[in-house]
Length: 88
Image (cartoon, rainbow, N blue to C red; front, side, top):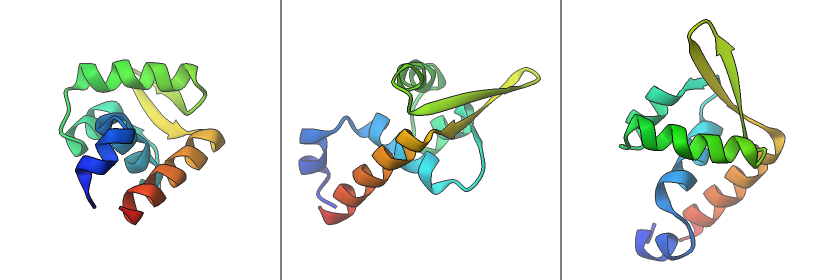
C-alpha cells in the first residue's frame, strides 16, 4: 500500500480504527484498539465518540468497561476504506 496516497484522502488513525474493528470477529475494547493502531487511548476515545455520533460504532457497557462494535453503516464504510487501502 502506498500510505502517502492513502493519507491524502483519509486520516490514517480513524480509517484504521474502522478497518481493525471490521476485521475483529468479536467486540473490542477501546484500549485494545488503541494498542493495535499505535495511538493513545484518549485520542481513540475522542474519535470513537465522533464515530458514534455519525452512526458508525456502538458502545455496549459491560460493568465498568465499554465494548465496541461496528454498526451496519460502520461495517459498510470500513469495507470501502479497506478495499481502497488494498487497491493502493
